[in-house]
Image (tube, rainbow, N blue to C red):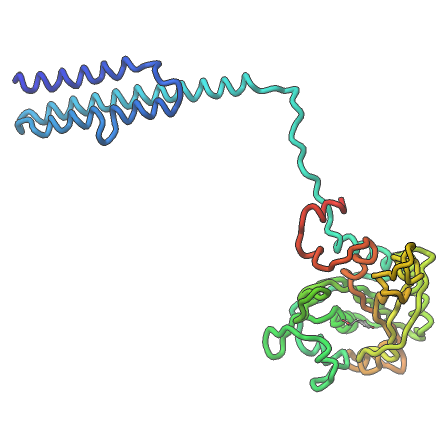
Length: 351
Ligand code: DAH
């Protein structure tokens, strides 16, 4: 064997021995990585040997290369084994640090959103009064959202509701009232339904959000009167806000009801006094002692006609209320935006 080759092979052997002597020297994975780089890195000791190999005469290269590979594999295996040992030791150490008497981490308890809470509570009261749940799509067509509700093309009421259009004939429903139409098309009277859900308007300021929640109510039968409407809504409002709540009906206008009314309840904040205990004006009712809570009325005969109900045979009442508004009054929340910011500190108070 040529001297040249002999020297080269011996150099590789001593490199392997040198590396073996590092056993136990790395106290951490980081230190072990340094050893790996020192021997196997791009500019490491083995790489230096390879440079020598390149300069050997061609006929010596195969054997020199074989040996270099062997040594590389041996060093790699050695370092991998040390790495395993370090990992095992670290796992064992962390186990020995495990203290079973330490208190566990407490998972945060979630809560229902106040709008959901209010919605559930309103529906529960209305179901107790005999109403059944009904649903309809949030993407609605013009006919259900407007036309069938006695709001024709040129009706000024269409301006009252800044509508979000999906296309010429398709809208994001501006109220839950189209579910009245869908319910009546689905079923013959008698009928008593509520429809909770999201509604959309092109409106965004301190007191309006582009999406909010409403609950619609509809009752149709023979000989339903305004007295029934009054009795039902009075019972509803008192179950929701307390038996001492005063209720008043103010004449109003909606295209789909005739006559129409808005319902006010005695202010939940000041008890109807209009002022706080310190004599200052109540900010919730602005000193009037009343807060508006819903719109309602007797179903307009034109609405019955559009769904094929005989207005000579049937009468009915309808109402619609804003859920955020009820939630604000019930929970004493002064700012509508609270509902949509989803600040956990706010939400967790409803747990
Ligand atoms: N749809 C009305 C609105 O969004 C609310 C309403 C008023 C619904 C009177 C009714 C009703 O069913 O009878 O402003």
